[in-house]
Image 1 (cartoon, rainbow, N blue to C red):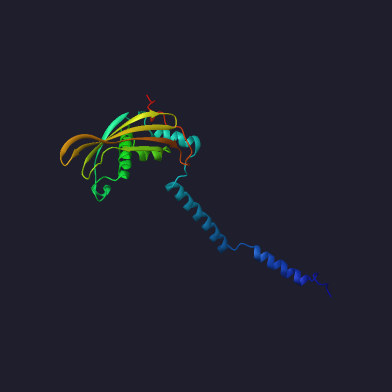
Image 2: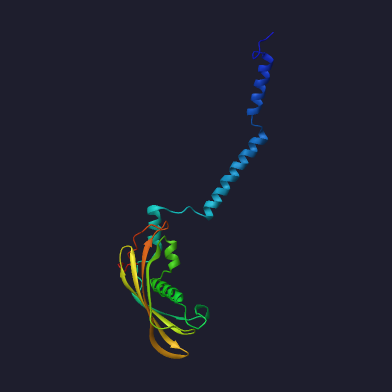
Amino acid sequence: MAEPGNDPVAHHVRARRSSVGSRCFPSACSASVRETRRAETQRAQREAHYPPRMKGHAQRAHAAAALPAIAPAREGAFRVRVRYAECDPMGVAHHAAYVAWLEVARTELLRTSGVAYAQLEAAGVFLVIVKLDVRYRRPILYDDIVEVRVRIRDAGRVKIEHSYDLVVVERAGAPRDEVAAVAGTTLACVDRAGRVAEMPVWLRGEGP
């Protein structure tokens, strides 16, 4: 009688089961190949629609190619009409509305270079406000036409400063020239990760 564990019949059965368990049947193998090919196709399609984000020098080279070599105008004037939604119950423009008007003037000044701020961000260049100062002198009323006169006061490697005069040029259909507020902003240049970055030379007014 064979000793436990040395039974030749039991050994044959175990070997048979091991062989069957590790065998790849044609239908199972075909399914596995199809799933692998499907996953590779889907990955290729995703990369075609959503290419991986460029990093390092490749991103900087792409940004340089996408942006112009001309500087924006050093100063400009842009008009807004005060909306009802921007006023308090007394018909006076809310102080927070002035900040939005400054942004309008600033971004329109940038547009004189042929580039919108959205294009600037798409190229990986972001400008964030690090300092804002507004001095209110006279009230601005509902339906006034306000001219925001903006100037680039200074531009360095990572920061750009603007100064503003907010002037009421029309009220109730009558022309006027009344400075209602003065303001200043300092913007810093950062990359997509929020790290301080060098500002493009053309934006600093150093381009050809």
